[in-house]
Length: 325
Image 1 (cartoon, rainbow, N blue to C red):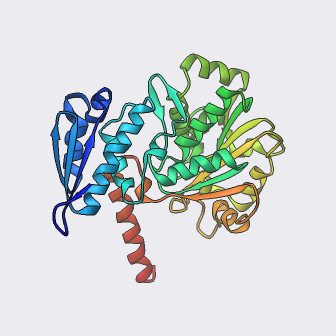
Image 2: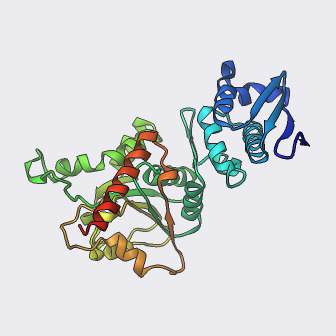
């Protein structure tokens, strides 16, 4: 790195010839995206890159290119999204250790954390017996938990997966849905099925369901059980009561771990009822073996529009509180 002026600096990077396709992308699509998002000049001659601009901008751009090279050397194939994520994380340091944590690979698709908070969440799940992931929609709470559950099953760390959620109505009525009770609650479990379909071969998934290796059931079905050697996920936990949450957590048996996910801004319980997720966060803070990980708008990995929707609702709620309701 060399100084050009007091406010401008220059840095030169050399991309190993065998890594140029990964770093630049097919038809330079990754390189072009980097040029669009960084705040400095990017000059490319062969495999040499020169960065010119303010010190912070150059350092962040340099971090992106170095991260792409290191990910490529580890066997990853970076995309434009990888470059964007590295750039966002470059404001707080190197993001390669986040994107390089591949949990699961299925049909060529890699499941990995995409933000620092998501990385903290996956690390907490690996370390703690009980992990709470709390944050808005789109932050990967359920998806990453399911990926870690499938990975644990594949590794033989557990013998079964149990996925549950409270069948709390959000404007619809179970009584008007057709079929028996399991058919009635089936729509509530679509997000869990969708995640599993992306990570388990359909034939194996069906066989696992039939043999009880994978169990998807309403929270009420957990009462009275002791769950050993299992990876258990409670989804939409903001819609539990404190009594239901205590019942669920005390099902934990030997060799098992639990992940509890929820969004405290989307409670569908009757007005005046405390959320079991809120109560657990208060009651279990500091308990050994229990971790709480919070995620926010910057961890949303869906469309940018989802971020703007979350922001709009939060702003509207703030204004409502200021007006007194």
